[in-house]
Length: 107
Image 1 (cartoon, rainbow, N blue to C red):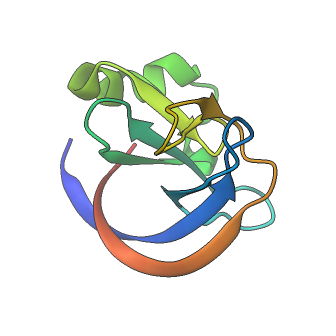
Image 2: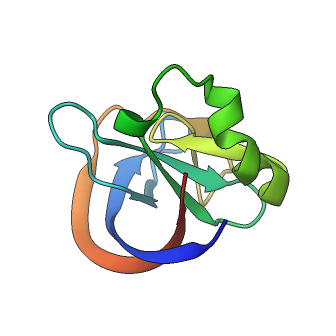
């Protein structure tokens, strides 16, 4: 697995536990949901999964390289970690602040 430079959106949402705005990074998807975003839980390393290339492969097999490298991954925006209180939550609304380039792994 090799890191590549990819565009990523810097987003924010409110934590339902403490109501503080929490920022997170997420790969943009089109109407069909082109990409799924995963973040390495301990490292913050970003992983982009192209959902069109998944075919019939089980999700666990597709995420195996990321889990092997990081130990565990969180699915963004379903598992955002609040920067203040540490709660893990799903984003109900998402605001996009800007885009930037990041080093990430394409799964």
